[in-house]
Length: 255
Length: 308
Image (tube, rainbow over the protein chains, first blue to last red):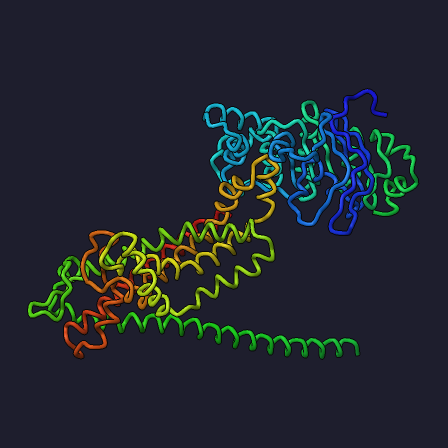
């Protein structure tokens, strides 16, 4: 199915537990490099939980347990002794609600590079400019970089969060329903941006909107009750789903 | 028919509306009166301090009062300079903050970010109990416990001095600082922390660069409240700082604060003398100082509050 492209992330028999509740069951999934993979499914199906296992954000929650393997470029990120901080430098994340820091626009973008030891002002300026340009925000904010990030619109904030993630130069971008808090125009801008970004990044996007998955993604995985029901090229999933449950969900019989 | 019924209903509704309106008006006035009462009490206290304090300046020049270091109202040649008392008060207050602010913020950060829920459940009430220890007990500990330790450690003849008072005041300000800072740090949205961690920073970096700055307004309020407590505290500093109305030359000098001076002398001073009035004048100065601290903290809160 995915022979043509390189695999960036390979998930092998992944299980995830909150206390006794099993949120993910025997997930096997391959995420191709420099493509957009969309995760769809009804609320509570485990798609966000799954996304957060890819950069080990679930480590922050108490009483959780992971079984199985997640290989990024062939290395298991759940092996013992792995530096989670190093791992997360490689993987950018954009959250459901825009969450810029209560700092200036410039400081938001420069936050990651500064934390990783870049002190040279010119280098930082360049990173900030490049990241904001890559996130299609530069023209709108270049004259007010020192203004608070809390004063720009929600759509701009979300693009700022994307710029902030890009500034640490990751290979992978994880997006957790990045447009669910935005209006249609801002959503369209972000979707346009996501499509542009796939040239350089492997993108995994969780979305509540099937139309969005159909519009932006190359591959789609359908989650239901913690399992991957079906996974394949987006066209195939939407036009000729193999599983009855996928078809029911896509045609809107439940959701 | 239907029209009539509708009209009746409308009349009933408007009656109800009127009743609710009166109720709301009544409540509004009730709360307004309570608010006004607080202001009246405050104004009354300030008026009392001024009316009793101002007669001081019939005999003592304002310049002497504020700029002379000599406080000795019972001498044959009485001195009414409060500068050494003010400096002493500021010295122990700043000393207390130097000790309690770093410790308090660190403890608050530990409680909010590091401690497991069970540890927090035990620690927070214990810290809040610390606030309920009477200050005279703390002063007692300063005399019998901390004083000798300080004297021995630094080879002094007497351990009742600035540093002793500072540590005691710091301990007394700690519960306020910890408790309010902890609330402020806990209230920082977890989205900020997640965003920072997802960028590949460790917990320490996230705490120092994101969480604490985001909680700064609350932490500032905590520090100011702690400071207010330290400036106004009487008993502990009276007991533990050596009772010597002089300018402190070092952190090992014995001193006497403004509050301690009022507490010691007011009981024995003859009524309506200059000495009596001067103690009220000290009270008025103290009032203005704490008022300024609160005002500044309010301004800071508003400034940062808007940014969030």
